[in-house]
Amino acid sequence: MASQLVSKPGEVEFSKGLAGVIAAESVKSYVDGIKGRLYYHGYPIEELAENSTYEETFFLL
Image (tube, rainbow, N blue to C red; front, top):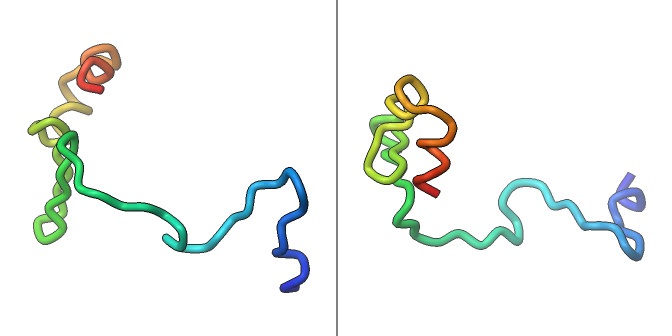
């Protein structure tokens, strides 16, 4: 099984979990893990999903 996990030339290597993932602070979003809330540019994600069009949300990018 382990030999099947070795990447071949030209293939992208996949690692489980967050191994090799660079994480940093963001000014675009904020996760309040205690409350289980996600904010995007200061707006609760639920509010954006319910009240904004795709274009309005995309504008925040």
